Amino acid sequence: MEYELTNTRFNQYLLAFNKHLLETTVLDSSDSHPGDKQSQSLFSFTNSTVKTVAQEKKYVLNQIKVRHPESPNRSLLVTFTISYDDFFTCPVFYFRIFEEVEIENETKSRALLTIEDMDESFQHLLGIHSEIRKFTNISFDSHHMSPTSDIWMYLHPCDTKDVMRSFKMFHRNTSEEQQVLDYFTLWYNTFGMGALFPRLCLRIKPTALS
Amino acid sequence: MCADQLIDIKDKLWNGSINIKLEYVIGEKTFDYIFVAWRLSYFSLYFEQIARHFEYFEDGISKRPFWLQHDKHPVEWHLPIGLLYDTLSSSQNVKKTKGNAWKLQLKTSEYPMDKLIPFLKHKPDGTIDFEHETKQCIVNRLKQSCFVLNGSSKKIMQLSERDSNDLWTAIRAHDLSLFSSINHKIIPRESEIQRIPFVIYVPGYPLLQVPAPLNTNERLTLGDILSRSEVISKINSQSIQWVPFVHGLNIECMLNVDILTVWYLFRYLDNFIYLSITLKL
Image (cartoon, rainbow over all chains, first blue to last red; front, side, top):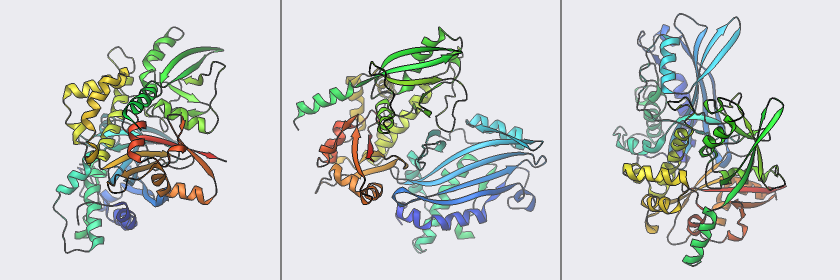
């Protein structure tokens, strides 16, 4: 494999990758062991859809809710998409994060728009110091798959291709499906959720180990 | 097309402008601000002067986020003004005054965060730093087009600090000579161009990212690029007629022109070509 993901391969294996993502994502906070029962009960996927739009392009729209360990009325809602950028020829991670507080059956929601906001909210809302990478390049733009041009945050993919090329984890002897799923997994943990949550990590296991 | 004609057309496009009339309602009174905006510029680069004007009528407006609205549609300040005018006018809803100005409303409450990029930085005096977000957006687009043209964003990432500052100054001040001298360092020689960055807007569809390959053996035309799009094919199959617009010009007559010439002529400040398709329904 030439360490590049084409739009065709992206479309072909997106559903399988998303299934893997839903099945193997673990929550690893400082106070729990990844994958243990207590840790897993703190988060859930509240929505997951694979959509097809113009030009036969597919993308995933997922939503994860992370609850406060001791106050279930406080939570963090992360909506994210995984789509293929035809200009940078690689996957791109768009997201929106809200902190939610439920008081007397009324949910108050606040959008988190900066790294400082997210850090503060994790500390305040979840009691966890997030240690989001300060160098993470978060930008805003119209979502390239939205017909109504809604604004989302995204991790700028200008160096994704170079970094993905530099990884040496791809094995020539494995099947194409396995190679693409490995690419997806590595990308997701580096330029997807893993770039946002290095400590409060919603990571997926490498497919080779599953 | 000879070099002189190219320069003449590019000069005309660079100097293209639109008359804007802003209306701001305070209480029961409506206040206006009329100005001329470059087609190739961005509304957010005018926000500081707009805020200064309305400060005469309402204290503190420059410390709060505001935005422009066309009918009920928030105007996306991160897109070129000419493109916004062309795409909104394609719905034939452009409101013009007698003086042929584009009429927009200024709004100050309930900033539509899901439709417009927020302004998050303030200056030391508490006023909003409109330039900070604008610069980030435009630089991101330049990185994107640089990647498409060169196969990597290195050329723009490796500009010297002075060149980077000059590039931004040129965009902000609408200085063609300074802009060309720096932009020249980002764009590869013709023989080294990998792909051409096209963005196509079709009403009702997500924007189409079209990195058009530059095949040296057989140069693709604008018509080739459009006919390869599945969205355009779908529209053709429904027998719907359409017209391609760029910079307010109907370029139907250029469908047989090669894409490199089209790009040299019509690229925007961020080196993209934004083509809007108007459907004749």
